[in-house]
Image (cartoon, rainbow, N blue to C red; front, side, top):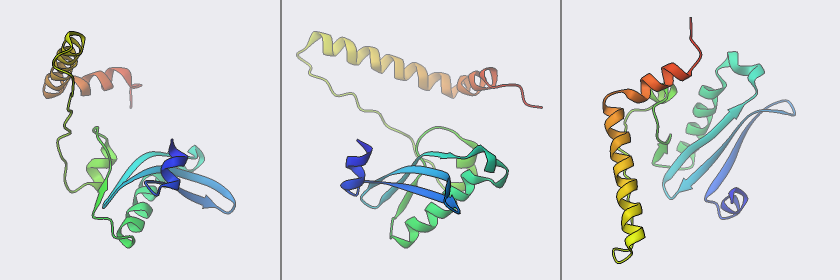
Length: 139
């Protein structure tokens, strides 16, 4: 669906080249006045140059030139977001279901319970503990 979104001007691909070689790429979404930075990637040979930061800088520059009011970096805690963002917001999830359907009610209640459990675990910092256990030990 990415190509369809690009044709509808609701998404874009941002590339950084070194000569003819693409070294960084990012697929972005456009929601009216909101530029949504998402799915960045870069050639690991250039990781010493902070390509992630360069991608953000150049796209933020482009978003400002093109009159976007908000540069959204998506949900989830990441160190680069702490370095670049001047505000955060709480992500809301809406579960919409048909009240007359028993299976829909059961599904909605189970999803609600799971989301509440996840959010409670996050308030206890269990997500950070989980990531620390899963990631390779850093020296």
